[in-house]
Amino acid sequence: MEELKQKLKEQIIEALNLQDTRPEDIKDDAPLFGEGLGLDSIDSLELMVLLERSYHIKVEDPREGRKILQSVQSMAEFIKSKQPA
Image (cartoon, rainbow, N blue to C red; front, side, top):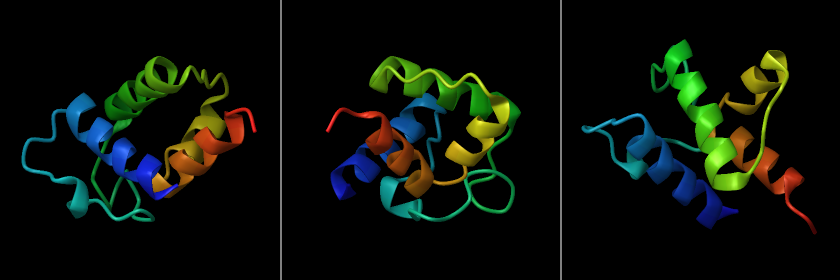
């Protein structure tokens, strides 16, 4: 799980072009939107594309997307839950 969270942080930084952010700057359970990383709705679309391209996971319900994209931790847990055992 730690490896997945590290990879997600790197992917988020690359996908959103967060040039002044390093993976260690993003806490696993810190909010990605608002107070935390300060992402916006356009960024959430980019993260949905990232999930689809990198992990072959398509999120149909925007409410579910909001829960999934709360933090790196919530994204990693969702990815793990969708992978075959």
